[in-house]
Structure formats: structure tokens, C-alpha cells
Length: 427
Ligand code: UDX
Image 1 (cartoon, rainbow, N blue to C red):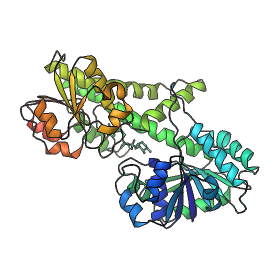
Image 2 (cartoon, rainbow, N blue to C red; image 1 turned 180 degrees about the vertical axis):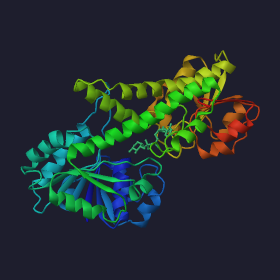
Image 3 (cartoon, protein in one colour; image 1 turned 45 degrees about the horizontal axis):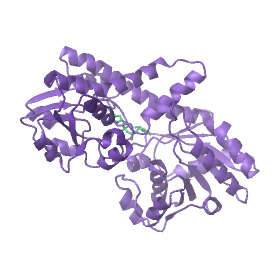
Image 4 (tube, rainbow, N blue to C red; image 1 turned 180 degrees about the horizontal axis):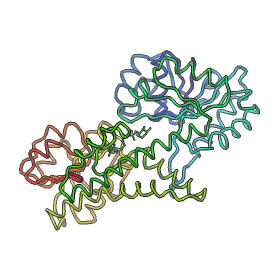
């Protein structure tokens, strides 16, 4: 099939290249000249495992352009994969979704054959039918489900393993109401062996939010129990190994520590809370999950102060800045909260992250420009005896922490084994 993908961020690029691998031709649309050029040179504008190889292998089967018209007229299906960031008050900002819908609609006006538009971006229940559909209809002069197809198909991609997740998902959720659109998407996803769930559009939208809110809550719940375990001298990792063996619960996503970050959980839980409140609901469980997650990084400082009561002028080493290993993404990283607090306490911070240092400095200039960056993790270990572990990069397992006080937010076993003083957040 010929596919166009609007927005070449993590989701758009991975989804598009996934479809290329499945034998389709893909046109990426983006407003960023630089990204377009990189994609056309088979260079991924983001770091994601396996993406560069895939782009090189399938060069010629995809290209990128600024031109919506070209993309829509030369494809059968269009995925909207633009960002849905948070506004200041936590509510969802739909400006990119609206702009994309308008441009697609304008191009659709000229289209003669059938075309299916699929919302891939994470949008609150009701958005596809109440925002995207009217814009598409107005700008194209055509009717949804009659003149063109419309569907909502959420993604469940984890950064770092996004391509694997695309090709091997736990499930594929497709929300639509017309038979023709359903057939097109069934055919498109036919090569992927996974349960396919067909729903109406707003159910598909809600499945994404409920999944993220549940997973975020699962971790916050584990962290809450973990904090109690810590006080009782119990290892919460063992506790959740035991809890997870119950097949109704499952062992995954039970790693206790300093909490969750990234581009999805924080943004989507906030958006869902705002939406619920707009509807007159008070979603106390999700709110509590967010609150636990805001407090959790401060546990690291609390534990540090047990061993080093006065941080003024003290050099503190930080291992990890990315929100999780194997990514350069620092969005909503717990490291920000940790560094901010350390600077407030008057500490001098030296940090190392294999991929995230540039982004950390750029994204958080208020703290990012006030700390030092090391070129190796050894440099951090050699410059101070006080170490905080924020991200569990595999290379931190190779280090020798002897002689150091280590406060660990992620459970790096080498540190646990070798540090002079070792404290884990929840164990
Ligand atoms: C997540 C969802 O997994 C994915 O389905 C959705 O589409 C987007 O959001 P991602 O943000 O890439 O993916 O990262 P994920 O691996 O899920 O981790 C999220 C955060 O939770 C990280 O900060 C991670 O360190 C933390 N985490 C994860 C824990 O603290 N404990 C765990 O057990 C698992």
C-alpha cells in the first residue's frame, strides 16, 4: 500500500519505517526542513535502535516532503502522527493535530480515489470525531465514512524498542465505524501476528489513555509499597517478584525506584486528569499516582542527606540524565527534579549520561547550564565519593563503586555489590 505519515517524530518515523519493512511505500510529511533532508539521506533524525539500518536497507521505498498535496495524492492511507503536548495547565494542546487535519483536508479536496485517514497521535476520547472529522470535512468538502475513511489507531511503542514493538505488538487496536476503512486497516496490519481489537473511535482513544494511566499507576503503587518496604527493611523487588507471579497481575512494570518520566506517562496522565475534571469527575487514583511520582525523586536526596547532611559546596556525581536507558530523551526525566534539588541545597553537580547530556542542557537550561558534564562515567567516579544513580544504563553495571557512597534510584547491582555505603530508594 502507499502510505503517508504526517509528523516524523518518534511515533511517525518508527510507524512509517515499520510499514516500509512490511512491504509498503511511505511518504513522510514534516515542517522541519532539516528532518526532511536527513530522512531523504537515510539518516534518522532521532536515535532509535535498528532505525538507521532499516532506513539504509529500504532507501528508495520512502521519502520525506513538506508538501501535503504530493503526499495525499500519492497515497491511499494517511496517518496523523504529530505531537500532542501538554499546555501549561496540563490539558492537551491540539494545535498540531488541527493544523495537520486542515492541510490533509485541503489536499483531499482534489483527490479522486478513496482515501483513509488514521489518527495515530494520542488524543482524548472524542477528539477524532469532534475535532479532526469536522476540520477534514470542512476543508475537503467531503463526508467522513462516505467519501473518505476515518479511524483511530493508538500506538503502544516504547522508546528504545519501538521498532520491535511495532512489529511484535501485544495487540493492535483499531477504532472505526465504516466497513471499508476496517478492511483497509485489516489488510495493512495483516502481516503482523497479534490480536486485533476493533472498536468504535472513542473507545480506541480511551484504550490508550487507560493503558498509560494504568501502567503509570502500577509503578506508582509499587513505589508507594516500596517506600514502606524501605522503612521496614524489606526488599520491594523481591516483594513484587512474588506479587507479579499472580497471573492476574503479571511481573512486568514493577521495578520500584525514582519513578516514571518520558513523553507519554506524565503528559497523558495529566491530560486525562484535566479531562475528567472538566467532566465533573475527581480522578483521585490517577492524581495520587502523579503525586507519588513527583515525590519519588526527592527520596534520593533524603537518603543522601542521611549520609551527607550538609550538601553545601559538596561535589555530587550523577549517573544518568535520560528518562530511561537506551534513549537520548530527557522529557520529564526524574533527573531534572534531582538536579534542581541538589542545586538548591548548594551542591556542585557533575553528571554523565551516554546519550542524554546535550538534550538535558538544551531542554533544562535553568539547571542544565549550572552543572558540569563528564565525558566518561569513570570521570564522575574519580571526581567525587558521592554518587547518585538516576538512569540504569547497562554500562553503569561495569563500574567499580568501591570507596563511594552510592544512592541508587534504579538498582544497579554492581553499585550494590561494591559501594562503600549503598542505599536503594525502595530496597
Ligand atoms: C511508554 C509506554 O510503555 C508505551 O506503551 C506508550 O506508548 C508510551 O509510554 P516509554 O515512555 O517509551 O513508553 O517508556 P517505558 O519503558 O514504558 O518507561 C516509562 C518510564 O517508567 C521510564 O521512566 C521508566 O524508567 C519507568 N519505569 C518503567 C519504572 O520506573 N518502573 C518500571 O517497572 C517500568
